[in-house]
Length: 291
Image (cartoon, rainbow, N blue to C red; front, side, top):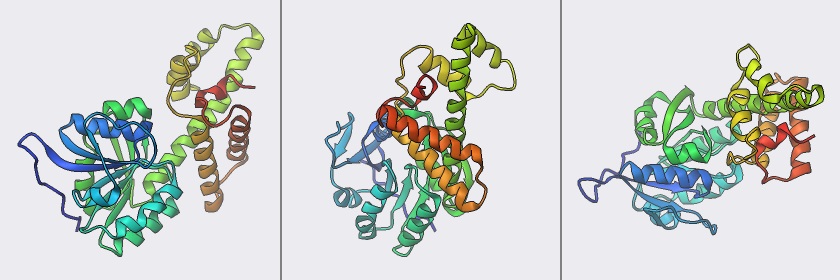
């Protein structure tokens, strides 16, 4: 059975309280979308990040006394692990929707550990960047049992344009890592496309337009290059450090499963090289123009 939701209403116009842990670019957007939908939102973050409008900043133990539903938006598996003692001590069963990107095996381990204390953890890593989070238009890769699906979908409704229920706990992170591996490979190859246009004297806009009418097109050629590369803005909100991490996690996962390939390892090497060259904070679309 899913844990009971906190259905107390502050007024007839306020929906159940939600907790957002991690108020960085993604977490702030998630919190903002929940506020816009009418929820009372409690924000937890020990760092010096701004508190989104309409969010009440508090500590995790204090938040858990007020709500049984929380969404995690954290840098990675280490930060999620640090929360487990507080979650285990929660005064009532909690539903933890982890939107962080983590190794699937770590997610399954945490889910089993929290289940021993009567809690539920599902993985719901996202795609769409800070703008998608702020607009409530994220794509979610969901790993969740059928028994908890209805409750989880209700929580995600104000946040997502697409929720892909991939399978049981851990499947969401498997899908997210495969998605980011493909994106990372496509950006790596787009570096050659961009370079070929310059070296051959072909206008890159025309070359890209041609590719986008044919079988070589991808989200990278249709969205990333026009929006963030050719425009020169490089402001997608997703940094090199996170993409290098995700490609590395995906490479580790495929290796553990015995399904890796030389192309996967080449992508890992290219992203590690870009990380060393430009640092972790540069926009990840820099891959296309950095040689």
